[in-house]
Length: 274
Image 1 (cartoon, helix red, strand yellow):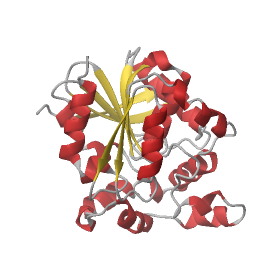
Image 2 (image 1 turned 120 degrees about the horizontal axis):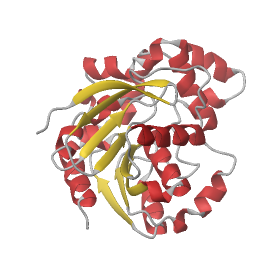
Image 3 (image 1 turned 135 degrees about the horizontal axis):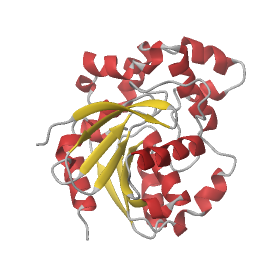
Image 4 (image 1 turned 90 degrees about the vertical axis):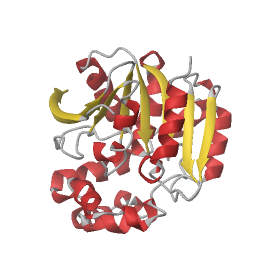
């Protein structure tokens, strides 16, 4: 398998940490809320056998910068993603996203279909009922500010018990990696601000436009995902013009970490399509 490299680059004024591997058509792996490019550790080298793969840490997360004045909204992150592609000289790429990363990948494909050659959405909230209930109170007036200040690395272990069916996957290394952003006020704010803006004012209009999405899309969901239920994933995949669905048993919200072999096979088959 190809070696995985790590480097930093400047993207729209944000010092950005990126892992990369391989050569070939471009694929961008986009992590979920509170996670980092570490979540793709099993996917990067496998896809790197056939593709040029990039896995950035979103602004505010992992080892990337945590600018206080960044626009931590869906549209703000999409603008940054396009700037990331421009900085790499990529006019078009396939996007593979988990959870928040999938939400932003879908938003990018809907707003800029010419820039996205394919979508793979893993554990991705696509309807307003799909939400992380343990973190949702951070959106509430008054209590949300207290919640934001109090949340810390300890929360990773707590949330991890719902994100994985297999608790043995919650290793000290995983806790260290995913607790990184929560050690600073700016990192905690990044998570809080995204949650406060996770449902855009025009969310229902975006949902109504799902049948217009022509980008080939693979929807992957864990049977025991506490955020995205299988019924939502099935409904969404059927709504799309070019959607297909994969349901993984004994799996929760992070399929690429809990079922990497199955996910890699599915991604390679999907991305290698004519």
